Length: 315
Image 1 (cartoon, rainbow, N blue to C red):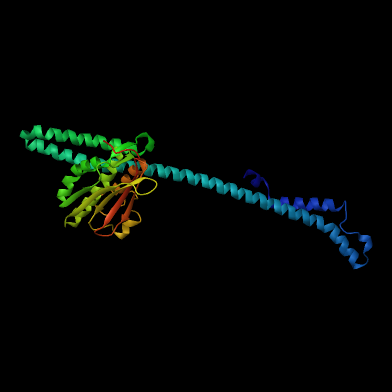
Image 2: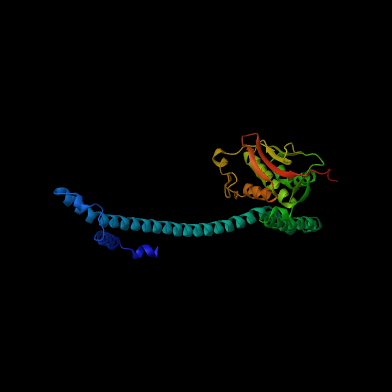
């Protein structure tokens, strides 16, 4: 760009015209001796004016080329500045998402701890009964932090065979208090020997987030319902196992459907809008994925896919 600033339009054009005029004194474009009268004057004019005009044209072309190059350099510099600002914005947004995700995943264990402490204060005679539950919720809080840290690592670092039927039965126990509060039946449908290759903590947390969202939605409706967790053996050549979370709740509002997995998208005033975003991130960290295959009332379905195991059943 500095080259462009050194070239001034008027001096460059004058220089080109002068060079052309100088060259015109050495040679002739047309032989003047072949013409007579007015035609001879025209030939002489062409002899003397054509080179300066050519020089003027070349000078203008040089100016245009240099100016165009300067515009390209300015555009490239502006693009680099914009990219740096965008990267900074994305980093700041990522920090907020991670902080909110930590708050989201610690909300339930910390709330349970608060309730247990209140019970211990009001009913000290139940101390022996409440301490194991206190320890269980502390372990859950610590486990949640571990699950979030795993989501940022490559899937190959934590993948192992996961027996789905046992995982879903464990989730039944975790979700039962919320299901009871929502007057909702929990149904588990999974072959005993069905297994996938995944991060066990990430898979469990992802399914729990989606299922908890469904139960909260049913509870807000206030009419009870059914939540079904099911998994099926792979039927496609890629060997992907489908794990479905289905409920007969109110469905997904149309205004939320396009941004369903975008952080901070929520249909509840008390929600963080991170449950589904975290669930998809955890599923993808295990080499799988999460989509909403049906958002209609009474048939809401979220579909996880994970890589199945091609070997013998787990024992």
